[in-house]
Length: 110
Image (cartoon, rainbow, N blue to C red; front, side):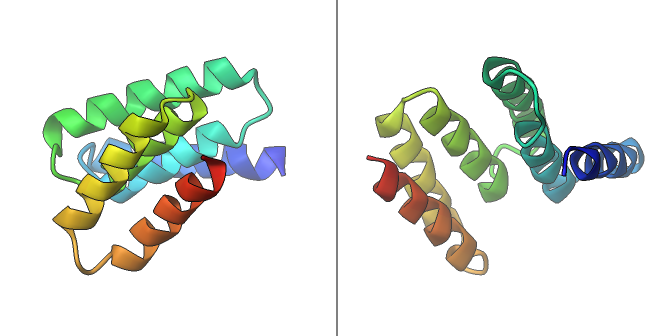
């Protein structure tokens, strides 16, 4: 599994070389970082930095806001996570199912 995560990271990095503003590639690169077998704080830091940078050019990207909500959960910032998930729900209709799944994950953790 670790090798799969490394391959995925390379793939998404290559996508971002072509289009650094690719919201999906940024989100899934962050998810592949979180799945690596490194120290959790290091993975969270790398992913948080990636999402924050991506949000500078795509501030209204619900997927990236969800990613930041996931980071908030990992940092035990449940109120902030909830706000991000609710914000993402308000921002989109087409991706609502995925956002609701993330929100339900938050509800189970609180």
